[in-house]
Length: 397
Image 1: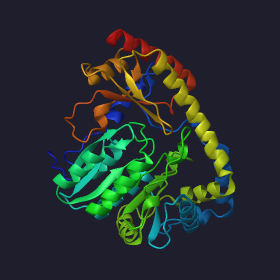
Image 2: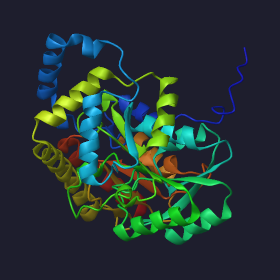
Image 3: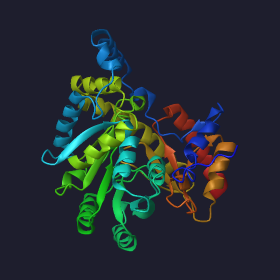
């Protein structure tokens, strides 16, 4: 039988990252292609304690249906925490719990954009969000980045030259895939453009607490006085991605529509995970926990970067992140990046992600690839980076 798929999904392709990860089934392959938290970062013992207490003392809370907006104590905690961070404005915002940051971004797009409306985003950008946006048949337009974030001149030109610009999607902190952080000056300028041209900013911040170098930069949401910034985040990098617990802080009318859309999607997010998130965040020394995570990722990042700086071909440039999980490497213009990545995994047994996996235009030429340092062990980083460094010298020098 020939199946005819809907226009919304007929052009969607499987994630190139997931395709690359198939090669990691080979036990000889060292993968720098994933984006998972470090296994040693999971607070396993505390989660086990809290789960046991919940299931022994209040099992129906964890096993019964709950409300779509999310577990009330967790929402109240997040409203307070986000208020401290400038990401929740009591006078006009509300907050909903979502099934991870992915659903937060997908539902935001669903409630705001009609088919053919324009959504602007950084180029390159996170493939999960890009596919969510594509599924709604929006006019997806990428804007080039500079070292300190999105190119403001090109952003304004994109706003002027595209019809019905409704949303700008950004990952200002340790962007996936480039690891770049948007400067405060650019954050202010982007917000001013949103006010001038009347569009909404969707600020995706899954890595904000994972800063291990440099100075904290205020969120764009903290600048919001007109109710035009949606802030999404997640506990995936702070506690566990398996919890699938994220949240959206946004103007109340937007949250009200997200609630309705979520009801027809999954009714509510996992209530057991929500309760554990709340009890974990309110019973531990949060800053000590975050510092532990930062120490883990600082060490792994520094180790990986030391090989790039000292052993890679000097023809490769890279962005050293101040936090997050990723390093962005760029090959010379005359090097076939896709062939480089293919040889890396098939001949050298090192998996990296080709840069065009994150392109808005699938035909766009990329000379970059992404490395992840959070998932592999230090031993795997050392062994794999020695091999990858040798490969760069053999192919480029």
